[in-house]
Image 1 (cartoon, rainbow, N blue to C red):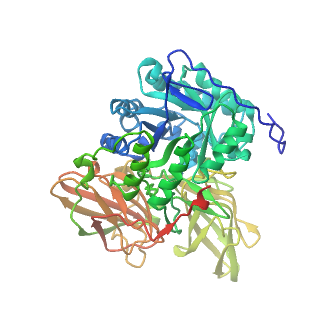
Image 2: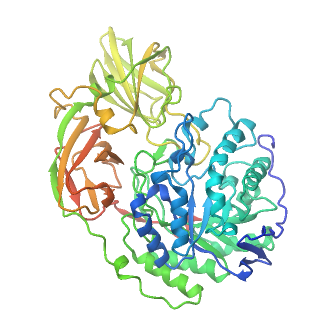
Image 3: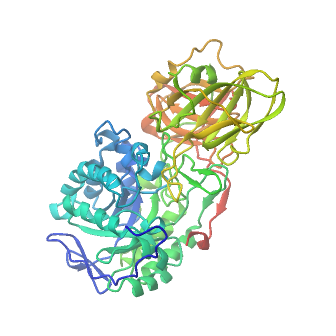
Length: 621
């Protein structure tokens, strides 16, 4: 393993990768072949974990109509194995083999990107929290502690993928080694290990790496004996020149072309014009390149699966992963769909055929309606009812065995007479604070160490801090960071010791969560934070979009299914509710409000993802 700060090894010209017997893809002299015939990959990314399984078929049909020949998907380890104490699950929504088979039956090849790191604006970059919090582990490296965990995961995953390879009559034609490693590290031993781990477990189709389109990213992430693909949103022709120089003989493949972008809470909604995206696609196609749209259909970060970035503080990703993709979050075909479809048909020398009528017609939606949301258990009563774990210093989510959700911390401390400051060192991510049962304010990871001003009476007071995990970092040096209070709580410069903490796993069944606390008289309009309950009567199930005017920040469940997070700061102001989650008759909406409640919810007929900001080409290079 290279020493910290060591220069990346000099680039070694890539050699043509021989195809295994029966493998679909091969290349030579910058030409890609499929079973010996010249070929170009025209692909679209679609993530099974972001689409309700009852809608997989519909979204795959829309992808086919876009004119692609290949489906691309990451595999999210934490979606299949959130607990170290249970074997990976490949059933139901997690039936990856079914998803891949459906793509093959639709006539598509499949590219699989198993990571284990996937980024993808997905919680923890796809890693289970139990893996990244393993003591002393060096993540994404040749550290045996790390590779042994990945080996166990691959031991479960590869028997699912291997039989679905083209050499066995399946649709999988390529599998990725790691993911954008040149943006993270330079441990070539680890990359070689990852590649060999795939081969040793029966993966014989084409292997490739994926990195940004410049020398810098290739220096850390490419292997001399493995096809190198690019990830970029612009300047494809420039990247092709880099590949000609650095990767002689290899066909140019942009495995991620960012035709849109994702959103963070509190920022603008990003869009990219159809004409601009089409022009950039044309550049790549004109140099003979292969391409994959990231995303062709983004889907939804259901539950608490949204990831986060970090730039001076956490930048939490919104619940929608629409990404201004050609196929919108609710399945609509956008102007970008038609613009890119035209480019794909032209590049393949085909005359465009009409899009099937059932795909052109908008999916039915529930009629717009208002419904009452009645207050239930107050937030503090709910949080205080969880089982307490004592400690001297505050415990983190990981020390409590909690991945996603909330932790309620409580202690008693003397507040000096007059002004003092409550500081939280190592806060991740957002803290709601009460003093003697009265709400005192909110701190975030960006200002926790600066603190919250208090006015004390010189006596002993009760401190209660409810910490919210807003999504684990999925990219950059903060990847793998813990959640909760990682250092301690101070009154001025004095630490507060002796705490009780109550872990609240919001991914438990809703009925189990609602058993915590007593509804009593319900949330008062002055207190506002807590549970709210509503019912909508539906004549026939259909898609809908939920708005919560007057509410502040929290989570929403539909018929017991955790839809995701909402936050009044936007940009997203509606949550997509897919048809399969509804039933004919009474449907139950449940809201956990952390700040300020309202009186009613709204079913809307269209999404509102926020005020659009046009994302320019240079932003995506």
